[in-house]
Length: 441
Image (tube, rainbow, N blue to C red; front, side, top):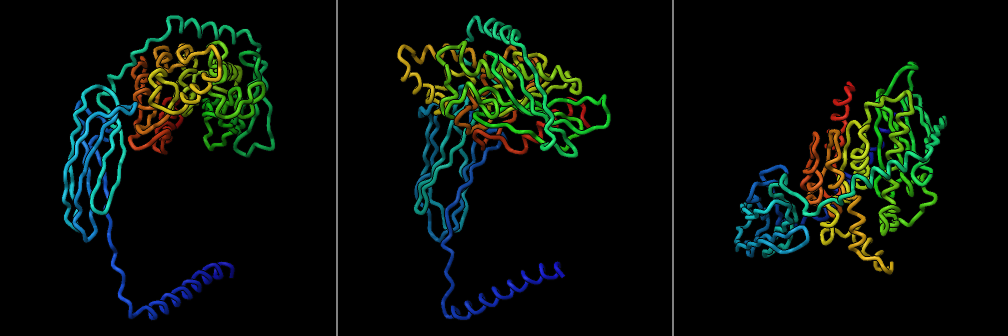
């Protein structure tokens, strides 16, 4: 009877609305129907799926005129550098007949390796619109003009030695109320650099086999993201989510406002928050090696944005990481970020103005020790990266400066129409890549 009610009520409602529509139509029967005025719409495509070209970028700009008016005006493009400098431009006069669609093929003559912003504009009788895209010219040749500090490697060696002197005091607490029939949840805790307490979570598949060992997925946090336990159906994978200092349940001595975290002690390379955050991640790898139920040779480290930066740096400094994935990682080719992005450089520049005796040049000298392109040559494990060509925080020029410096096996997935983000295609690819590498079938 309940099933009948569920079916009957929508049918009755449909009948009532149908009756209202019929009555309304009868009342309006003498009025002539309104004609659809149509619209002017555009579509921009490029023959290369990544919009990468050896010299001349190619675009097809289509205009769909469904109006009854002839559309007169211009179709044009304007090319910009990543810093907004105006480069090539072209404009053509157009006369588009009514109820037609017209195609305009453009070739943009840029030759220098790098990424370029382009705006395609239509200015006609019934429409003014702009479509923004990015294209690349021989991105595999992109190199940063800035060299890493001569003591870069020794700086991080001494930092790791300092971490090693801190007794980790690992704690693993079973959380029965958070656990399920398929996964056990543990709160994990450890002491890191500066004896700071770092916390996170671990979920492990329930098994009756006491000798079962699991591959490890380590997720690192984005900017001011509070990571929580991840519950999954995978029976072969333990999942660790780590909240580095000053984030999530690892807040404490560092408890800044959201916009202040990125420049916390940036004036001193030995006290900058990212120095400790990277060591927190390495301490997490130490934790993995203390757990008998985890496979110490199957460790996957991954993250996006700041988490991508942390995963990249961790894999570079710790060869115990088996494979690494970084999506839209920040802080690559840092000196070239000035003029290209608002965040985080604008916040850092504002902070510098409030600190007497500190210059932006000094801050950049410190940030050279946290630049991904400088970590890249140290990274020996297979690396998967993702970049959005419209990314306003991690521009593709900067990402490729790091990617091209990687000496080991590597792959980058490009999303030409996305910004500081990836889509489910990347998540699926990343999961398959990890499963194939760890032979999880």
